[in-house]
Image (cartoon, rainbow, N blue to C red; front, side):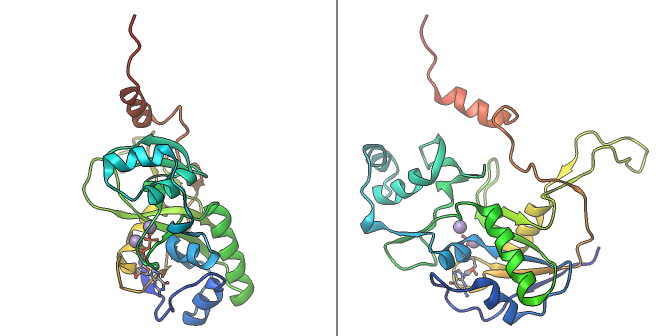
Length: 253
Ligand code: GDP
Ligand code: MN
Ligand code: MN
């Protein structure tokens, strides 16, 4: 497979109400089969999934966490408000958001937006990716895959990488189970999280901070088959269970 990875150049600063698919389509000649990756931060800005800190009144829980982390309790409240399950509170909030993604500070950002504002992750990232994909089809006539990305920390390793938050038009996972390796052994476990791999390289081209590249087109991916169960359910997620066991003090007696 030979991939071409192209930044969408000269996108303006994005504000609520901007037509992101149109702005992207104007700046690149899409082809069928391309995968268009979009930073969740700009998708959310375009849709107004942002909040003003001065509009937020922190609850006692946010105040309590603030005393431990030193973070603005209103910022912490914006994280709690989008969290469906908080796994840890300190040294940072790690929580699950709607749709199943688990992220540090629920993926709420204070960068690349005005002071005193926060950017939330898209509330329904799969729907977001579908909507962008349909819009791009309407504008360009081309059938593309779409991945909404976010820069995420990970367990066990220092450093952040791009992750897929939502996707459309492509399976999240390439399922190798049942395939034979070079020696004829049947693979029993391997499910490759292709959408995260593509998000990773796209995130590298986007850069962080002030690069100004919130969309990247990946061309040349050979189609793959698999499924969309990217997120473990609670029962399957062994590490999550271990975390919760540690977090709950054992009852005496
Ligand atoms: P996240 O990974 O989704 O949290 O987004 P980042 O804040 O890391 O931004 C990803 C890329 O998009 C970086 O290159 C930013 O400089 C760029 N970016 C963020 N907001 C805007 C915007 O409104 N317009 C443009 N042109 N680039 C932006
Ligand atoms: Mn982010
Ligand atoms: Mn980023």
